[in-house]
Image 1 (spheres, helix red, strand yellow):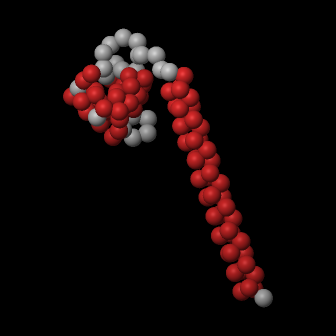
Image 2: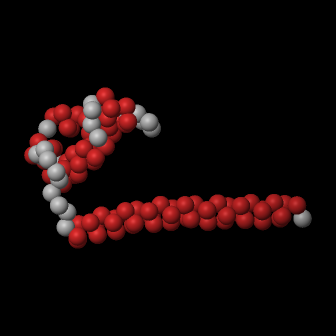
Length: 105
């Protein structure tokens, strides 16, 4: 449990490009780290010591669908943020143009 928690904390502290080096140094796969993070999110720190080796239990169709919808939701939220930023930028540019036209005439 302590080792897994330590690795999760180190991974969270990694800057861009450092995570791969951490995983190689510890001889871990990204999937293992993802699984430990899931266990910690679901059961807290105590959940980290409970995982047993071997194949992961089969996920239900409903769980897979929920994961798919969560990913799609996150993707759409990112798209919306970009579009909101573009609209904000366009509004600022228009305001600037109008202010420039008023000062010029």
